[in-house]
Image (cartoon, rainbow, N blue to C red; front, side, top):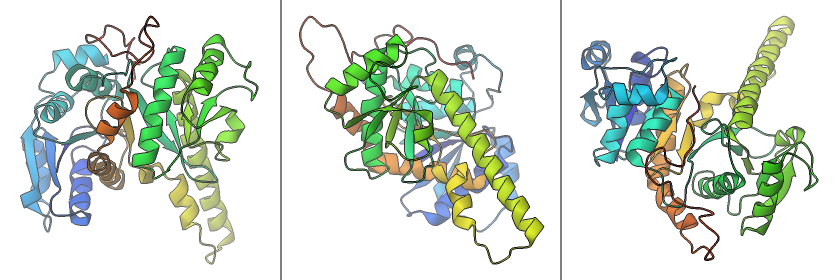
Length: 350
């Protein structure tokens, strides 16, 4: 298995990516390899200072350009074919890599994946899934930001994508699907959410109804569906609260010198580095999107998430999930994506 890693994505690139890749290889089976995609001279300079890693499973693919934050994603992808994101995605398209991991521009990774890997049949808009810690088992939230405006059929698609990921990667046999809303009643919410409720209720999914914001942390469902505008707000609020709680606990421990109190498990649950990045679900390939501030530990877990997705054949399972006949005359409830950009709406400008 070969995983292409964008070596120029993080704030600490390429060292953070290199150290994360080495940690991944040291902890993995010998059949796993990493392709470091980025400026070869910069990567080799960092590697010269390191030793004791399996160099036979670590290779470099030169990509001289880098897409930086603030660039319009679609325009940057087309203007910079030699960027680490575009080159890395193309490695997977050409069969030279089995997955792609990047802590670079989320919009650029999404745009490149749509352009080169293409959406799976039955997916109008691929969605970003991200794991949220709860008082029970973690919840998969999608969409976390790829699609700011959605129609009811898109939310239904997200639910199917989430079910497969929760089964294959999270180990949940029959995931509970929830719809993020302002109330539990079916008639609550805007027109899109009300119609989405009806579609989800009529589906073969294990739909448990509307989930209010306060129920997320209680683990009210395994897969939580919403549009990308709301999902990204929820995600960033969750991250800020987690950091706030960790900071408070550390401050109190220091103030009271309570050395006997073990809070390591709490810190682990709240730490985004543990969850291995956010998969872009619904494209014909494995794309894992990570924070730009990801340290080596997070990069390692992102690579592990990519490896699990490849080994569990998640892409094949998603294709099977959506491959069913539609009633004639009803249009494409779960129709394919058509030509690039034809039906997918705009990519969120991250």
